[in-house]
Image (spheres, helix red, strand yellow):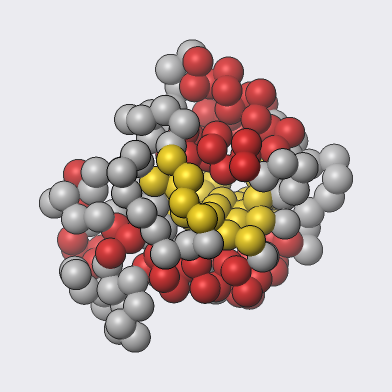
Amino acid sequence: MKAAILLGGRGRRMGGVYKGSIRAADGLTLVERLSGLLTRCVGQTCGITRQGETSPCESTLFDALPDAGPLSGLRTALAWGGDDWVFVSAVDLPNLDAAFVDSLRIALEDDLDVVLAEVQGRPHPLAAFWHPRALPVVDAALSAGRYRVTSVLSELRTRRLTEGFDPHALLNVNSLDDLAEAGLRLP
């Protein structure tokens, strides 16, 4: 197994702040925290970002298609995964923890393409295990200009877990208000 952290784009909703540089109370950036967590939980971890950025992960890869959103980063992660399951995470999940990753890992089966959590009917595909065999579906969506990650789920064999995990692990920081609510600070 491998893990990929999508390090974000231009930070438009955060006033231009690069989300990976946001610091938690312990002083670590979100990307440093996630990289350490996912390396311990899953193994080899890479950061996926736009051209010219770096990451503290073991390796850094660049988005397959600039400006195509997280689906482009997912495509890069799946291509990098080889034949291994890849835990794909957005960088802006400050509460993601080992218990959450393990709850999805134990639900993996060979005949699935995606294992994700669903809270109140909302799937969370950017804190999920993806198998690289989903790559042709992701490529087709990108070619058709469909950039929403959720747009590919109906075409894939997806297991949606609705219990057995703490939904607080999926707290997503998308605005300056979210940042304050989560107790995080700007660099």
